[in-house]
Length: 130
Image (cartoon, rainbow, N blue to C red; front, top):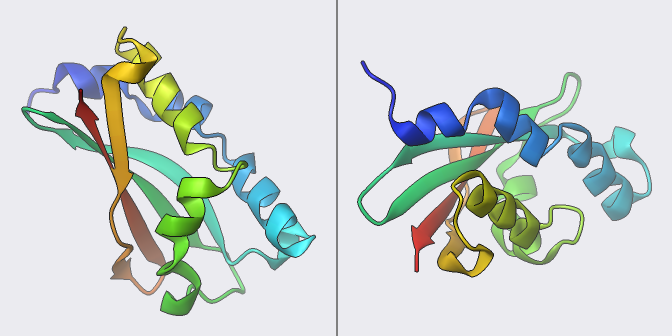
């Protein structure tokens, strides 16, 4: 299957640079005062593109020895939208930059958390062209 132009732009390495893995620890440190209390790691993934935009996701992967319970993740879209450590506007600005688009040319919204498995929950990030 051929890759799309967006797939060649949004490589795993670039996505990790846009949303570094240590941001999960910073998020839990801000929430709980200790990163060790965090139940999951957070990674940004590229899911695909459509005519009017692209879909990314925040992949929440259970940490060893912790429980990734639904009650921990279902309210996260509202938290992620506002939390300065997650910095969604900054992430979207990096997406715009990677596409050589002006920062204000993209709109974004988070969809409700999806439970993919007991150890993986996903928060879809829809990015559309303004």
